[in-house]
Amino acid sequence: MIEHHLNKKESISRANEVILRTPILRQAWEHAHEDVELTKKLGEGAFGEVHMGKLKLRNGRKVDVAVKLAKLEVLTKEQIKEIMHEARLMRNFDHPNVVKFYGVAAGQEPLMVLMELVNCGALDSYLQKQEQPIEKKNEMCLQTLAFQAAWGLEYLHMKNVLHRDIAARNCLYGDNKVKISDFGLTREGTVYQMDPHKRVPIRWLAPETLKMAIYTQKTDVFSYGIMCWEIYNNGIEPYPGMTVAEVNQNVKEGYRMELPFNVPPEVQNLIKVRCWSENPNDRYSMADIAKHLQRILQIPRPDFAAVSFS
Image (cartoon, rainbow, N blue to C red; front, side, top):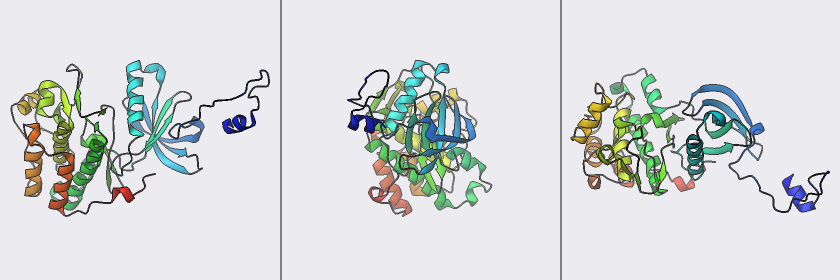
């Protein structure tokens, strides 16, 4: 309709001779509420409900989506800013191990954030629900989970982005794929100095973050090592038996968790030495982590450039 009035130079109002000269067309990631059908409530998110739904794309095709609903009247300006910041970042991501962002529906309330629906949900919950104990599981499956998360985080770092909250709870799993998600704390750049008074996920943080509230790609690498520990321990919370205060103090003093016996020795060494080193300069980049995992596990790296994620 916008294109019709623009091309024909017809009035868009019968009462007033108003001619549309410079229309503002919707971006590809901007959707109308009527194109979204909510089918099932999945739970509660940080800013509102999360639903399963169907999104009608502009080509008429319908896709399954996860829909975050945010009621703007109950959110602070800071929370609304955070939601839109996350959406702005996510629209630049295109990788099979990063959750796909379809866009937002912001023309009316509630604000809808539309993302790929991943059928098994959060990775930590998926691991916790498995009936077999970890030592009886297919070990190569566990290695693949860690490897795929490495590909996703490597991609984010290539996009000059710090995730800042890498954890199994912030990854999704479905169709044999791990996908990094939850970009609420994500920031562009290679270094980020945080307000030291803000609440943070202590159990996943690097020692320099605990000491100086600083984030870099190497602090993401440390958190990735903690997530690998979660994967090999059925998704349980890191540092079992310790309080948050104890974790904070012990990690700053050099304490590191032990990995289970079923983790291959080379992978153990990679995590302990190249993810959890006290000195960030001794940690590998995520590109190097992915490269070494590929060599150790002999898992072929997909040609991501040849894969379509739309």
